[in-house]
Length: 143
Image 1 (spheres, one colour):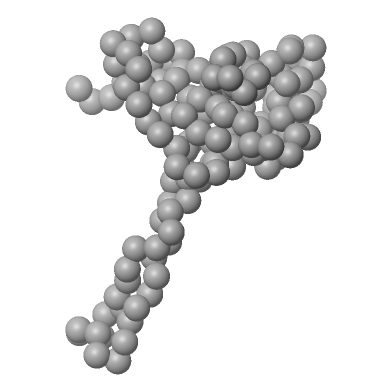
Image 2: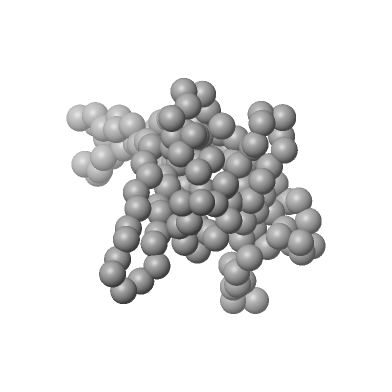
């Protein structure tokens, strides 16, 4: 199979710290987690063939960014404003292929680093929210 349709992917937030997750309404795009790892240079005068050498460094869980068809009266959208203001991390999920045998879920703790809105004259209102992951994001088969 060449690929899978991402339609129906869900973004969820832990509503009360007890593992009860609610879907954020009207999410149009989700990107991430965008994980990375540092490369620590260990090149020395005797490195073979005058090539730089590296060892593996610290990993970064990255970020998740969502774009929402914004509705300032939607409870799940205003909840993100509260998440931005709070000092503690919150748990979130990205559910891929929900309701299928192939369903997988990214679980991660994060803080919101940016919230931005757009109000164009000839298009819908949008909100973009960026989540900075703290620790290791976990991908689990949940279908």
